[in-house]
Amino acid sequence: MRLLTPSNHFLERMRDVKTMLVFLAAFCLFSCDVKWESKFAEIKTGATRTQVKKLIGEPLSMKDGIVPKVQFWGPQDSLASVIGAGSHYEEWTYKNNKDDYYVWFSSGVLKNNWIVVDKGAYPHDAVFEARK
Image (cartoon, rainbow, N blue to C red):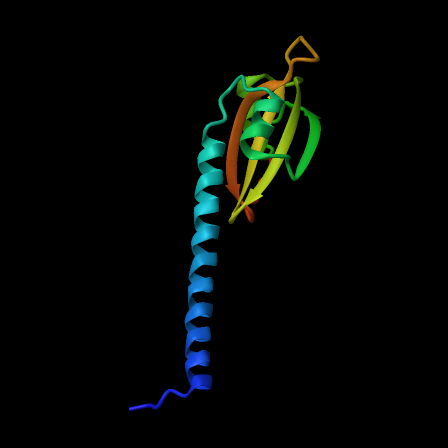
């Protein structure tokens, strides 16, 4: 049997507190990822930039592009069948957990009406290559 002095008792309590804090931090990280992913899932085709920002916040990066004619060229591959080769698009990238999340916008003929046309998630270490 171990005799608990005031200093030993304090150290035992601190160990318990540290364990609880580690547990709470892990729980928060997991629940935050789940919440974020469920919000990402709520993004629908036709959503505006403002609606996407309200759901999941500012993107880590944004870039403009034109859908190329090659069959497979990266995470944007699905855009060729959605908006067609030669169409302008805007790509917003987010990182969460072990995945990269993409939201693609296009304006069609109305240049000021950018809406979601597709979205996707891929592992951070995914490698994309063009097919010949």
